[in-house]
Image (cartoon, rainbow, N blue to C red; front, side, top):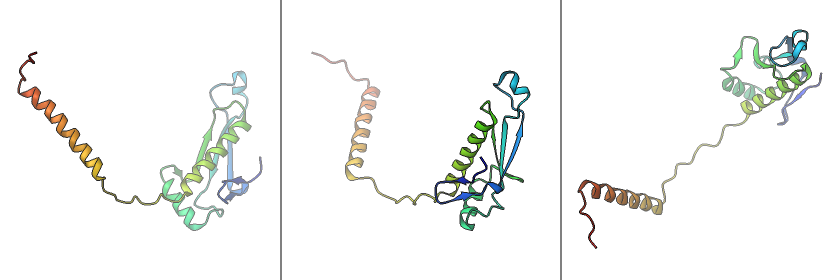
Amino acid sequence: MSGDLELGVGLVIPAAELLWRFSRGSGPGGQGVNTTDSRVELVFDLAASGALSPALKERALRRLAGRLTPAGLVIVAAEQRSQWQNRQVALRRLATLLREACAPPPPPRRVSRPTRSSVERRLRAKRRRGAIKSARRQGAAPEED
């Protein structure tokens, strides 16, 4: 558990940059919930991290601005009954968040025009719908056989 966090994109966060806090959690656990510190808080100071390049750090700080606290990025996990499982959940969440925050932006959309056939299809549908509505307005005479 004292290992580094591998992000999968050639980035590794040293274990020394991760701060763990434990407390008693609520939820399932029976009598053990009152005695074990199974709730986990994982704190990662993104601004002070040396694991990310300045460009990636700036991108991540911009994208995660709403989640940052003065201490850094805080991940809380209390769903599982054991501290070890909650630690695993918190690490996975942190890795996912950082992977998404450091990902390059999508390529810009290339502006395109609708095809001729799609324009004709749309206009045909509009004429058909308009004919139905105008027939309704005119009070069409009952059909005779």
